[in-house]
Length: 461
Ligand SMILES: [Zn+2]
Image 1 (cartoon, rainbow, N blue to C red):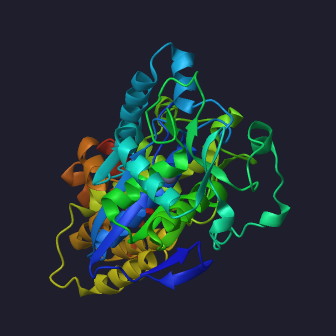
Image 2: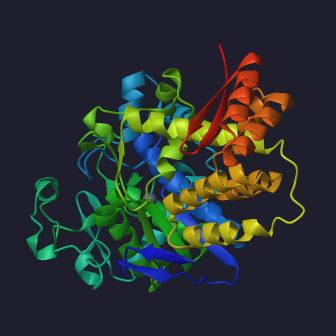
């Protein structure tokens, strides 16, 4: 298995800390509004990663945080996003958090994103954060200002490495306006105090206050995965600040590099802008559904691009993904009625090709190409094991093909048989017979459409 490590900017051979096991921490949602499809592209990516490791025989332990305090609209000077949501909807921050956490997991389930083995809420781990901050402070990496306890980034030599930051060019901006005692522009708060209007506050050795977003992920990842673990995932937007600060805190507390591979997913773009919550161009999973798209079609769209490449979202690209998904299901309907070949060894090269595609830094577009090559080949060589093989591939793709097939009306046996006979007639170039069979299929209420991806059966309205 090869994986691209943001830390080295290289595709590296993955070696687990413990043989046969992979520990993954995934930066989770801030639950103050509905997650949009840009967020979900990132979770589809981490889900594909987990599924790939499982497919390759690893035992995976995945942990994801739920941020329900401490994530501010602007770093350290803004409003807590949860309190923003609470003000917007006339609810308490806790009501907002639980509501949107539930909505997040419902949408994730629609996309077949597997639930992490452990999900942890920030508000339920305040004592773990305080304990970690105490270690950071005891090791001499922190100082006090009127904002709270601040991390001294100059004490950590490797601070700029993950984000390839040019610290000497950083300007003392907004942070200095609110905190003139800040030593360096890149320094950041561990624990924030003196914010009497903030609703969620806890006692701490540094006064009443609340943790910053960055310390949450350090504290919870170390608590559940240990002081060394394999992979940390997130979006590329996390690299320069959130993950850079997490890495610095981890080192300051433990004296070790806790994370071995930092892996980041690229953005989903909408037209020319990237999809972010501040830009007012959000699309949610329910909005896609109300426009007649299946969530699985969006997942299929995500599979068409490498996780490290930006993916442009348009209605056209989603439609095309949905068509491909339906084409695959049509094939499944036909192929699941085929007899099994006595010898299915012809499938082996496809299985190997699929496996090596996903093991090569999650090259899912390549893996999808293998699926379609197999479909083409199978139309000339009907064998039910083709479909079984594709269902096996779906353990990685996660489209939920078996389920989708079971909830859509099956094509009758006779129609499938006729379609198969027609394919054989076409293969031997017996066009008259092929036309006759098409006529029979039409009489039975089905249309057959020849696409570059093979014949498709559709019920006639
Ligand atoms: Zn995080």
